[in-house]
Amino acid sequence: MASLGEEYPDDTHTFMLLAIEQAKVAMDCLEVPVGCVIVEDGKVIASGRNRTTETRNATRHAEMEAIDTLLEQWREKRLSQSEVAKTFSKCKLYVTCEPCIMCAAALSFIGIKEVFYGCANDKFGGCGSILSLHSSSSEPLIRGGAPRGEGFKCNGGIMASEAVSLFRSFYEQGNPNAPKPHRPLAQQATQ
Amino acid sequence: MDTWQILHIPDNPPIAPDQQPTVDVIASLIDPEFANTLVRRLNQISPLENLRHVKRVKKKFVEGGKTQLSVILCLASENGNQLESMQNDVQELMNSYKLSPFITKVCKYAALSKEEWEEQCKIWPTSYHPPTYNIDGITGFSEEDSQSVFRFMKYAIQLAKSSDNLVVNAAVIVDPLVKQVITTACDQTCSSYSPANKITLETSCCEKLEAFISHSDSDGILNHETVHSNSFPDKSKQLCTGVSCLYPWQWADQQSDMSSCYWHPLRHAAIVAIESSAARDRYLFPSLGKIQDKSFEMDHMQSSSAGSLAKRQKTNSTNVHSDDNLDANGEGSSSLSVRPYLCTGFDMYLVWEPCIMCAMALVHQRIRRIFFAFPNPNAGALGSVRRLQGERSLNHHYAVFRVLVPQQILSREG
Image 1 (tube, rainbow over the protein chains, first blue to last red):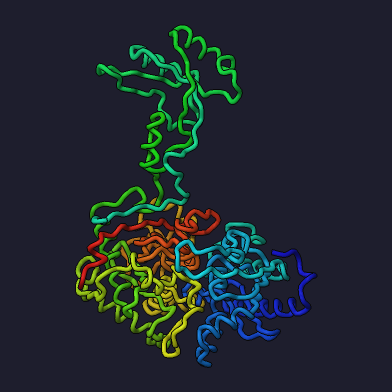
Image 2 (image 1 turned 45 degrees about the vertical axis):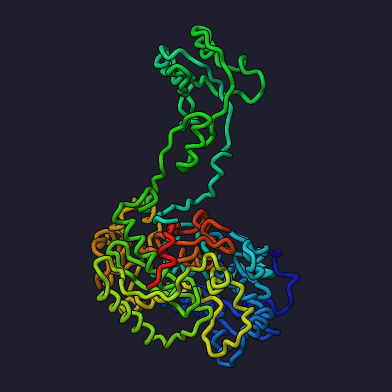
């Protein structure tokens, strides 16, 4: 995890703004406001936002939505597994909130190159807050196992206050679908 | 292995039973005649505050059928000079009964398992209280519940063996109150199965469910499953490469031409089962999809509901405005007027221990208990490599059990 944004490329904030736009779309749909975009070679190739309420599937986080969008596109183009793996390895994810443990594992499995996130996720964070799945790479414990992924680069705290204020206004407007916050709103990170 | 068995996988990694931390205490042999008096007095003047699990007296049978009693006088001090640092009243007691103190070890922490307790007692006797959590089964299963667990696990294993001639992981979500299967799924990281569009998926999911219920006996378990492979590959690792949670990175290495197959690196059995249960929920309770309907989640109820499945969180499809209504709706299970929030109260049966992605997905979806048959030494997140059930920061916690399966179930034909 790196400190606040100055050393990032110019386009970091541009892409994070697009992720925040997605989070706002989620909020308009009464979903917990988390959004993301996936970028390849400086171009946004997919976006996603939280859909857990609509689907009643609590695993439908923004990252999973965006990954599925890409896989669907590439399936239509009949890309092979190795081609898909190669493309993922060039992709960067920009997401408003630190990926949860599930999403961080998923990002490791697909072999994403780099992740930029907004606010940290004190309850579920899989990129440093609770577990550090982005940096985990070790030998498989049973022989014949595929070597683990190399993990991915992870940069937190990019436009974090914007992400947090989205959460805050979401819970202040009264989320009819999600838990009442148990903690001060500033800490509430629900994805 | 030739019998079924259910083992609870605790939240904390077990210490090797014979390597538990100890502390030094000062003890002395005593005349059994004075045991009662001494123990009563010592409990007053030198209570073992942080060692409540440690028994004050150790009984040892010696030659000639006699018993030898030793009693703990007090904790040994950190620095060397034991006798001087002892309390005066303990010293007085020691002098008046002509005790000859010695230093010995006792286990520092209460035993968390029967195995730990047995080891502790070899050093100095302790008491053991099995943990009392609020999730059914942790303190043991009734015969009826055990049989039900075994049958659902058997069903999951049959699913895992019957898919595509390649062994995959299989997931079965069960409502334990009515012993009914909610949904089943197998790994779809690489399969010939192609998910249809959403409407067909929902329909077929529920048709399958109805077929399942109508075909099942009172236990909700199918009896006519056919199994094609005659040996289960926990020994032949080659075949296990189809198990997504064992090899979550492997999808990228597929060499064969899979262009005709459906594949998806993240569609592990548990993920697919969660998706399917969500589709079932939307199908059975369509009105709740609308924005104006309200469903509340109350995490605090999970800790306060004291193990009663009947108190499972419910949401009313029409009009829930207060926490109180939820308990009132606690009766029954799958009636159309109430639905559980996500998978609250449901059990998940998995043939293999899930990876961290699936384990966290099951936290998100509020599964109550997870049963798996085989540990996953490569990427298992419920005890093998990680232990997600012990992460206290999470907003939901399930109980985890390993089910030991008799060999004949794995190798049985048909």
